[in-house]
Length: 266
Image (tube, rainbow, N blue to C red; front, side):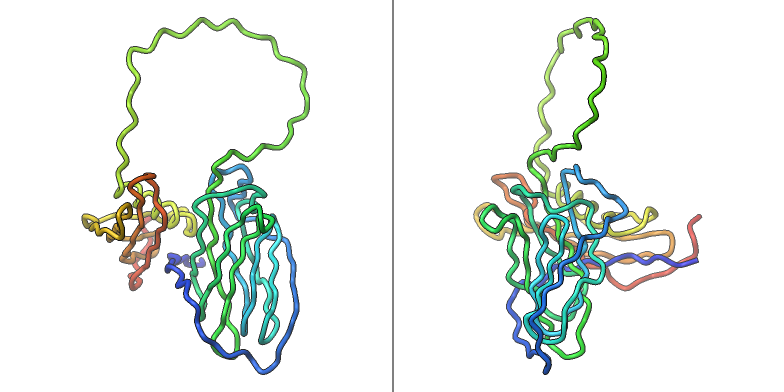
C-alpha cells in the first residue's frame, strides 16, 4: 500500500532574485490544456490550479481559461509537467487572487492577476538560480464574486404548478453573527490544507492565536496546530492577514514541521 504523506505549503517569496541563465538559450512557447483535478467543479465559488512547471533559467508562465502557456526566456526549454485545476480560470473579474509556491528552489515574481485589460490572463515569472533545472509547484487560487452560469439545460415540458399554502409569518429575524478574525483565519487554513491532502487528513488547532497590527486597518494572526492523517502527525504554524474594514482574510499561509509517523488509526 502506498503511504500518503501530508502536503506542505510555504508562502511564496514574491521578491526579485538574481540568477544566471544556462549556457544554451531558447525562445520557445508551449501551450497545453489543463488536466482536471479530482474535484472538478466549474461552477464552484472558489477555484484553484496546482501548477507544475519545469524551469531551467527563466520562464514566463501564464494561465488563460483552460490553457497553460509557458514561454522560455533563457536557459533550457521550460515546460508544463502536469498542471491540474478544479475549474478553468474564468473570463471575468475574480477576487482574492493569490499565488503560493509549494516547491522549487528559485523565486516566483511579477505575479499578475487576471483582469479585463490583459484578457483575463494570470501570469508569473519563474527564475531558477542554478543550472540543472527544477520542478516548480505553485498553487494559484481565486474567488468568483459572481456565480458562474451553469450549462444550458435541455428544454422540458412544463410541470404542473402545485398550490402551496403561504408560510406562517416569521417571529423574528436573526442577526448575522459578528466577524471573528481568528475563526475566519482558521477556516481559511483548514480549507487550503484539506484541498491538498487525502480524505483522512484533519487539523487540530492548539494554542490561542496571537494578534499584531500591520497597519491602520490590517492585523496579522499567527497560531499553531497539529496536522494529521492515518499515517503521520506533524506540527503546523500558520498566519493570516485580515482587513478590519472589509472583514476579509487577505492572505494566508502555513508551514508543516518534522514528520512523526505511527501505525494506522483504522
